[in-house]
Image 1: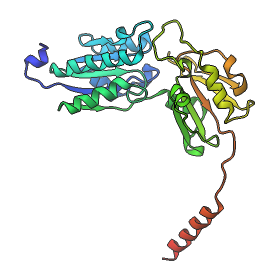
Image 2: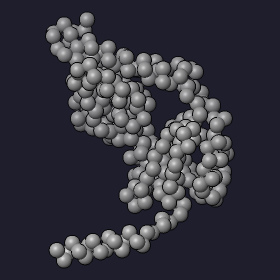
Image 3: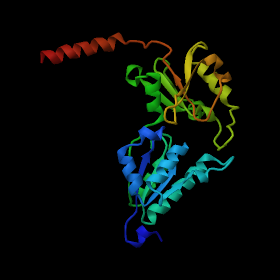
Image 4: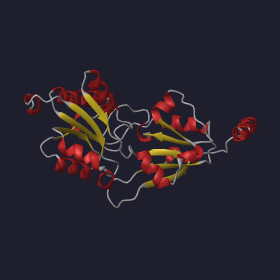
Length: 272
């Protein structure tokens, strides 16, 4: 039995993010929760971030990355993470789960652990963090309010025939693992990548320039930004951490009838 449970304390769960670059992107609120929690279960993508978590809570920090296994389905690992988190909560510990980036962006274990904890009557919530998308907007100078922005996980986009609007920005996550649902430390099976390029070529001209993006992790480092045309995308070097940004390829099609109605409503409202 945990010390917390022995003291009659009821367990709870807080999910925080360490940002993509922990130094400078870990919020003051998240730091406080990591420091004060009975147990901190973390998955952090860089040694600096890992060291910081362990320094903040040397007694309670525990890495969940040990649950990954070569060739092991990632969903199996995620389920094991959820169960480990919930075991701490059920044991009476104030539990903090900390992951790199935003704790709610491509983090199945945090969402599922919160859902199950709440269903069992425990207090559970999530704090916002800085995701790869936030870094992409800043590093590429993208304003999602200008043209809109659609976002899909690459395998989901490909396998489920997702629809996209080429007059808007598009972000495809995890293109460096497209088609591979397992964990591989040395590199993923990208035999399905040509299918992704084939699909994109039905929507965009081969000369359309897109950007392979990877946010900087280390302090003082620069992001990796590789411009490449869609026609040559299959030949560009890939990594598991890459995100694909596709700028709008065409101008939007105005709707004169709707615009006229908007003007009429504006005039009517002013007259009233």
